Amino acid sequence: NLKVYFKHTAIALSLDLNDIEEWQGGDIVIFEKNDHIGIISDKRNKNGVPYLIHNAGQRNYEENVLSRYHIAGHYRVS
Image 1: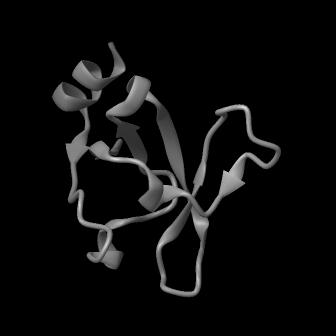
Image 2: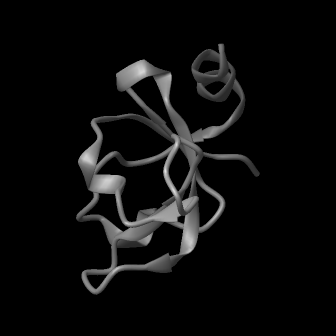
């Protein structure tokens, strides 16, 4: 399970989207719903919230959808 792996081997970061500085390109995000996983993009929306790179059947793989899902984990591998 990737959530367990990241919990033990990566740096756990804030789940608060308002803490903009904590969210950097390349960070890994795990969502509660269906254990969906994605990578934070270097692109951001007008409010500074980063885009999400993921594959969930959508047309574009890099989307402004980070706030749509309940975030269960936010990690950085160093």
